[in-house]
Image (cartoon, rainbow, N blue to C red):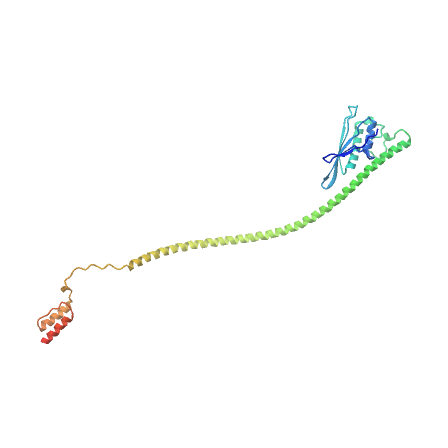
Length: 303
């Protein structure tokens, strides 16, 4: 019974299909499952993404529960590949191996039987030597050969893409290494500049410390001079007070009352006494003045 292929994308970007729209392992798997009375083909859930700049595909597929053989449990396969198509092929081939390993007795003599060894096109297993006309056997083997060739073509194409991506990554890595070398040179130059600036800073710090020492010494000298100036100001204040004290007029002493006669010059009195004693009666003048002289002249006239 032919089954139509279905392909659709869900909102999360996953591809859902039974992969029956091309000649490959999914179709061979489904035709083999039909011989064991399966009614629904396996479904494939595939999604692509970029991993470190390389395309990667993740495919999950399930061979459903057998419709009336309860001991034939579902078979789930998860496969990682390069693209969706080749990863679906690899998942279908893996499902064929898993189905054969779980149902060894049932697949004997069937085209799906792989025996104990890997599927090698150069060696045809005995189980693949089907009874029937040589044309049918040849047609079946040619079909398996075409499928295997198609699968290997997909792998070869994706390996070529992988090699190209690896070369691109190598070129990108080489450019990054060149940039790193250039940055290393720049960093070395910056380190030299920083070292020079650090030496300048240390020199400036030494100058600052020396200036601080000089400032401290000068502060000490200034404090000493300020103390001397303070002492001089006190001395000047004392001298100014003394000068003001000296500039004040002296207070005259108080004299006692003495008779005027006692204040006459004893020498004048003595001289007059001598004249008077020689020339007549003495005339006592209380003052040494012109009246005394006139009296003396009068006395000479009388003489």
